[in-house]
Length: 274
Ligand SMILES: NC(=O)c1ccc[n+]([C@@H]2O[C@H](COP(=O)([O-])OP(=O)(O)OC[C@H]3O[C@@H](n4cnc5c(N)ncnc54)[C@H](OP(=O)(O)O)[C@@H]3O)[C@@H](O)[C@H]2O)c1
Image (tube, rainbow, N blue to C red):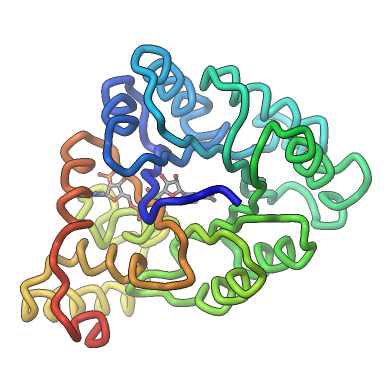
């Protein structure tokens, strides 16, 4: 099984080579992207950065449905893989997820000629080390997990300071020996203080109860002298069932902040108090 570090830098908002280079040179050693992020721009700039400054970084990517037709069959998975490795300038990928399979049913994905067969084929050919399912709705991710075809799972926005909905799924995946990625520990930005994400959680307007909960958490953080983003990050890092937390950055200063947040001291009892 692929060895994995505790923090993976999310590149969904990375669109310039300068930031891509900084990501590759960061101490985290792992970057998460997908065929569809920025309509291919994320992979393209990561590939340019890798060509100009080859470094030993693991880049994880994802197969996406055809952006025009929504087709997500086995042939599309193979094409999506070819597009990704071409943009990235690599021959193979350590982890390759099926990304947001919302235009197909699980039965279609699992049918002969379907997306899952194509992913398994890539793994059998040694073109990817591990295959994963990466998506939002918990019941969908769980159903894909139960096929037994996948080595890894990525859930997002559902194991955070304000939403623990994915706790059972994460435990079940770990019990199966899967690699578990917990993405979006800041809920898409709200818990990191992003101005863009103010009032929003998981890319949507947040419910008033969620915003009230964030205010209470922020007050508790002040009492303990821990910045809220550090609390949000360490909440995920502390889970023994999570192999890697996928954190998005959209600037070099956020990347520098991420390094500081990872090493921020967390007082005994603080996480329990949360
Ligand atoms: N279906 C899937 O497979 C899926 C879904 C979601 C996420 N993911 C992966 O997980 C990664 C993380 O998710 P995410 O980026 O949506 O959410 P996130 O990690 O919860 O939040 C990242 C956002 O927080 C803000 N932020 C980070 N550091 C900050 C700082 N120091 N100061 C102020 N704001 C800061 C930035 O917002 P601004 O950009 O507004 O500044 C950044 O884009 C993605 O990049 C992607 O790789 C995968």
